[in-house]
Image (cartoon, rainbow, N blue to C red):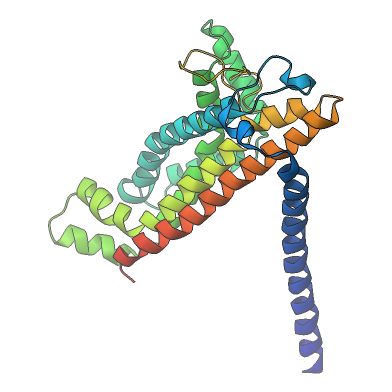
Length: 283
């Protein structure tokens, strides 16, 4: 008996230590971004595009990267939703949950989830070369959608698999078809988890740089077409930190602060939406 108590105390200490390490890491990251980014923050950073000599310390902001990041991540998320949601509904409503197809699909998503984002960028770049396309917002959207598709699909799948089979059987017993059950029962029941999966994927997409460096390119202008290059905040941070001018490096931390703020808004929004949609979930 004393041995079990000692073992439990050791694991409790390890879990507490792991929690404190994660919290401390988050605090240190936020502190570094805020302390170094706030001094360089001004209205010009979020209302203007880079002017001539911006990377030499002259005037301008990162409005092009802010709008480019939102357009790219938003477009990729919408595209991923239209692909991942039907896959998840098919695997859990039409196919058997433990079927060979389902097992292979989930294994494929797990493998795709672990592939580095630079590989998706290289794959997207290869496709673009094959079709004769240049670096553009559309190319970035396709590359990022491929990146976040397995993340979104796997997260949705885990939520949908938690829905009791009895709920689906009750829907069939009332005369509903599989399509009606999928859209009116499964989606409604899993809506909080689906929203979480979408926002997680959006946050992953807006913060990635490797998959867009070859596909979306970079420009100092706001993207006005799917076939024009688009700037993103991660790449703006990368280029700003790569300059030897301290003022421009400080702007990189300001850009990081803006990106962190966007992610924070996404997290808060997800909590509010989950709380709203949970009211309609059968418990």
